[in-house]
Length: 254
Image 1 (tube, rainbow, N blue to C red):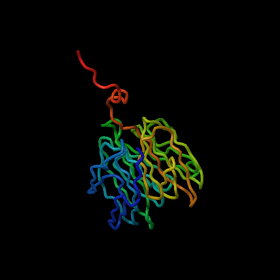
Image 2 (cartoon, rainbow, N blue to C red):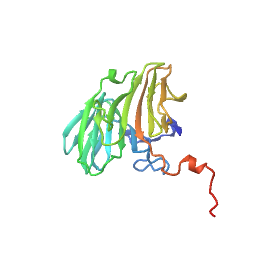
Image 3 (tube, rainbow, N blue to C red):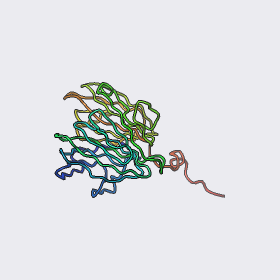
Image 4 (cartoon, rainbow, N blue to C red):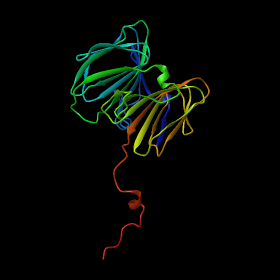
C-alpha cells in the first residue's frame, strides 16, 4: 500500500488561540477510516498564539513526542516540573499510569510544533519525561533518529517499537530508508518537494506506506525540503499464506 493524503484533505480547525491540523481522528473530529496507522495514533500540526496554551490536563498509556519547528512551548507536569521546549528540542512524555501537565506559549510570538502520540508496547509503565537537543547539522541531508524505541542511543527513548526521524534536505539530495515488509512508514512533509519512490509530496502532504523494500527519498528543486518520517511495526493481517490461498484448492476427501 502507498497512500498519499494531500494537504487539503487534512482536518483543520481554528480555535483563535490554536490553529491545528489533525491528521488522525482526534477530539470531536471522528473518521472511522482514519483512527491510526499501526501504533501511530495522533499527529497534530499545531500553531499556538502568544500568551495562550493547553490548560492542565491528564494522559494515560501513551507515548507523546513534541517537536517544535519555530517558537517555544513551556511544558509543566506533576513529576519533572517546568521545562521550555524550543526549535531543535525533542521531548518525550511517557504518560504510563497517569501524568498531569500543561503546555503554554509564554513568549511574544506564535509557536509551531508537531505533537505525535503512539501506543506503548507495554501498558502500566511509570510515567516520565525526557528531552534532547538536535542541532540542524544532525538532520541536514540525512535521516536523524530523534525518538526511538529500537536501541538508538542518540535518540530520545520511547516505549514503542518505532523510530521518529527528522530530515532537512538540500535540493536534489537522495536518501534511502532501509525497510521491509515487516515495517510501515509514515511521512509528513513540512516544506519543499519530496519524491518517495517516484511519487511526489508537497508541503502538508502525508504518505502512509507498507513497503516491500527500501524506499528512495529525493528532494526536488524549489527550496529546502524538510519532513518527519516515522518507521513503525507492520500491522498486516495474520492468516493463510498466498501459497495456500492460490494453490490447487480443496482436495476431494475419499
